[in-house]
Length: 151
Image (tube, rainbow, N blue to C red; front, side, top):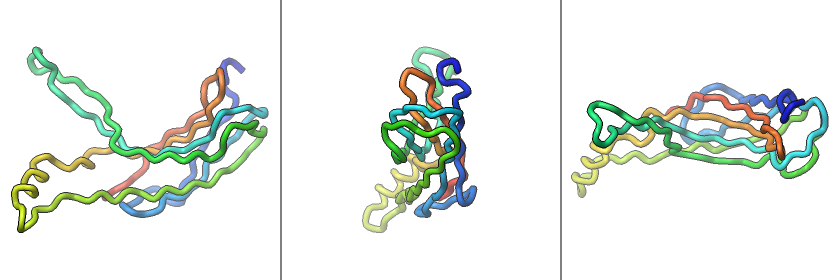
């Protein structure tokens, strides 16, 4: 195989498709290899990203977009070793975040107003699971999927 292309695949299986804040996201990473492979690590990540738009200095009406990661949890499932040919399964579990939202307080109304004007930091965030087998001197075997997650 050329640089690891076609060496195998990763699938992510979850107990359900949609989650709420504070829940446990449980599932399995299913690794299928055509032949034994030495790898640095098998890991899974849960993260949130959003697109941030900003006006470009000195240009009229032009915007610049960048992706901002707002949250990240990572679990190493297995370390450096030779992974066997065929199918293998690895369990994972994440405790999903439960962010505290700023609410106006009777003793400090200005703090509540500033929080409301600043906007919700969790608005427009897309949530993902990303599993990866890190192969030395080759392309990694990856799987990324978007999940439903609401606060």
